[in-house]
Image (cartoon, rainbow over all chains, first blue to last red; front, side, top):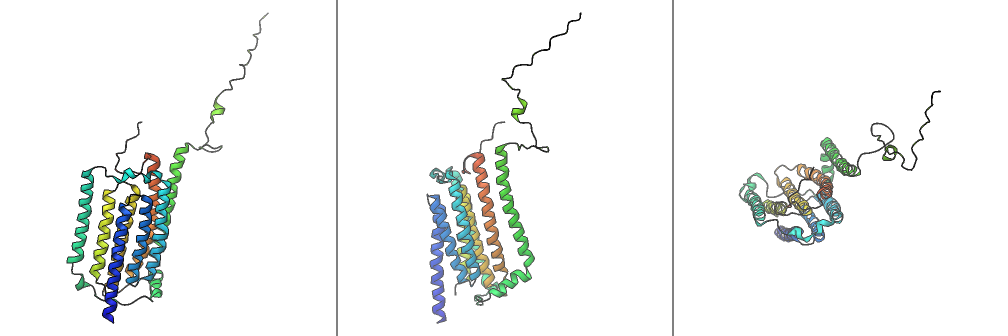
Length: 214
Length: 103
């Protein structure tokens, strides 16, 4: 029975891994960027399957909520806000040399990582079996909030700072386009153009007649 | 039981695929998607190594929770930077040489 379950898990793993790799490839190579964003969302959903296999249901839920629900939606918004991103001429490479260099670097990274995965003696330092911890969400919550709560709050602060920084960047860019800010008070006050210009229609003031001494 | 090396090989394949997207593509959104794919690979490797480690702790899962949260924030920031790049240079093409504005 145990062997059957193990084989079933392996088949599950291979199936999900195949789907994830194909979807990741499509997300990078599909000509239409909108479809690519959708493929990325599907890929993120299937990655949650690995977390279920790894006895981490909370992480799986978070993966679906954040990656599929949040990040892929953000990418689709980016595509909608940037119509130039849908230009299919961007999918051709700038030059063959650049493409070759990029492919070579990516292949080196993948090969080194693969060698690390295959040759490093993981089996000696890691167990081949693991404890079933599906129902230990309470312990995860305790670990996260009771033991390491300060780090969670620090990360939350960093995130808020980055989001506020992002909004500030957008506002600054917009303010640069508008030009100098004009107001009635303080150092921001600048004379308006109407105030500087003398009225054109008005006649020049009549000169006072000189008094002639008797 | 799925061996740990299977998870690691998959994770490193995803990292390689994401790296390929980040190195080769010109479209800013494709580059962002590549970075996210790399992040997914790292997440899988972290959770797998945490679960298979001899002394189990929740370090891996706690790290993943933080990594996923930070990924959401950095995607929002990347979106803003893309918008600014598009406003300034009127393109989302990173392969195109940027012409400096004449004074």
